[in-house]
Image (cartoon, rainbow, N blue to C red; front, side):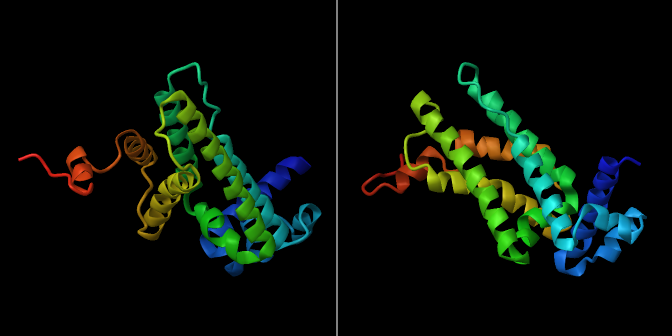
Length: 205
């Protein structure tokens, strides 16, 4: 096996072990056993558990961010948004139990892990904010504050994924993407509910 292939093989094994046992419950011995390689082979590629964890985390982050294609402002926006949502949820579903590495373990390992996670969210948040601002200038996104809206949208991805994992339910990537898209397109409250919340407004009889 070529050195690059061996490294990828070790990363795949580490990802499985971290997904099953978490960072603190995993060991180099577990990874070596899962990969079925000599311990020395592991240390030819990684200095230790922390380094291989960082590598696995980096791959997961890259996969998620790469699932989002730039929006072509000269084409129909809605299908592109839907396609991006399906791309992200598909990547998260394919990650399976490994989502705990990204959403749970990364921020609790140490300051370095927390910084990596913060950088990931900062990048993702910036991309969503830019997309919202661009949509506002095009008239396809309502005018208003973008930072908290962007954070809420990121939460719409993270929370269902984590809840499905905690409930031991398979993640229906397509259903989640469609649900988020419908939420973006239609909102939640009806016109009547909105009118009722305005002082002095009355619902039609």
